[in-house]
Length: 230
Image 1 (spheres, one colour):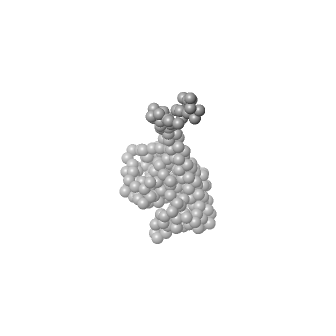
Image 2 (spheres, helix red, strand yellow):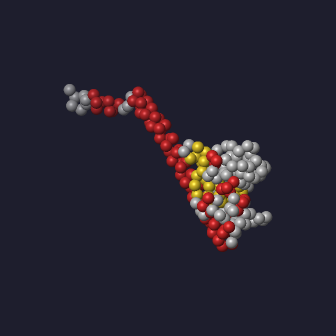
Image 3 (cartoon, rainbow, N blue to C red):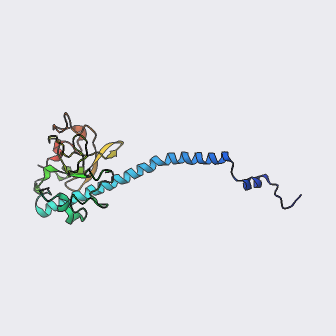
């Protein structure tokens, strides 16, 4: 017997490598594990985007509150001057509505259509309202996910209308980009700087879009009481 020839079957098998069946088995197992992990990874990423959006909304709401303290009235749009421009000294990001570049807090991470859809909109009922006259700052909507009209079409308007506002092609409404307990939800910032996710699903308002009224299922952000400062 040649002393240099290995007669151990296991050792010989190692030198030959894996069989095709073994390779296919390993590949199948990797595929199964990947299939199990991908939904979890996707959920984590979605949660991270939602957290970032809530952080954005909270900072913008706080900037609006500070503006109200400094100017004795809540921030408002006026011809030639938009809210992003007015709040730039507080946020130092996004100089105007035309400034859409970069990773600024005015961009919701879930907004895939930034070139034609605003990320956030302000409650128009707060325009130039004295801060001290806002009855319940912790339950009055300051801003929320926006960028759609009653028909669900994308718009660049950075305002939001209350449920009582009549419908129109440029009437901004809350945009449910997120999910809460598996249901559509919108990020809402309140006057005092608090930010939460609130359930919101079509139809956004009772009866005809923009016809007004209250929907108890959307009490977090879409009843008239939540939009009226006084």
